[in-house]
Length: 311
Ligand code: ADE
Image (cartoon, rainbow, N blue to C red; front, side, top):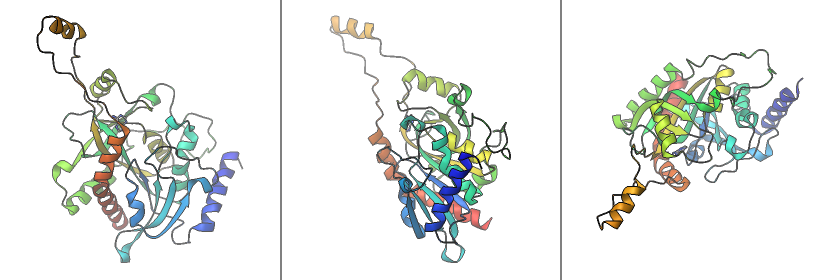
């Protein structure tokens, strides 16, 4: 057995000791992004497992992110769907290796999940996306993947997995359909849910205005620092994936800068100064919007799980 395989085996042994038989093989995995972990509190027969008590797991270090796996049932009592939710995730910008970032996803797949719903907080690049909109991701642009930092780079330790993974079908059409059906059943307004492309950046810095313009011009609708490694690991293991991005801030992309020369000339001539373009995103803003919209995201995820259970 390779070192990696024995690590998975000890993680799963440790989970078996704590999670009852009915929940140890969940059908759906869920990843809860910044401020979106309230889902954990609505699981029935919930069992919480701290990441730092699990062999093989790293420890999340971002404020606003919890660090637990939550097992439980979602949906109506008579048709409850067993799920496992990650309350808190790992990001490469925390210094975790890509292998650590995707480790929980691989554990979920080994436990037998067939579907994973990934949520995240993201910046809106598309000016038509209001803050608070949930975007159902249909595609991605991953500059790190294109420039030598693909999370799947490495020796192939499991020969049963594809070496050259196609990504044209990364975002499951049937699952995206279920999300829209779920939104309809919940009576969400049409504008509450959009579709778009996720641009992945490594972080931890937010993008400059020029980088924002670049990502928008390349076709990105939202930008974020997570998710894509998880999508790749899940797809590598044959799991169906859907991604829901909550727009927590608008990335303001001025196509003209305030010219300092004009500003100084106006000052010298005693003329009024041009209005400053000034929009600085903060992690607090991201968390606040996340908290405000957590309930809608929770309902959408829960209804989608219910539909997966009855599909
Ligand atoms: N997450 C939330 N807002 C973001 C932004 N503007 N850029 C990258 N990641 C984000």
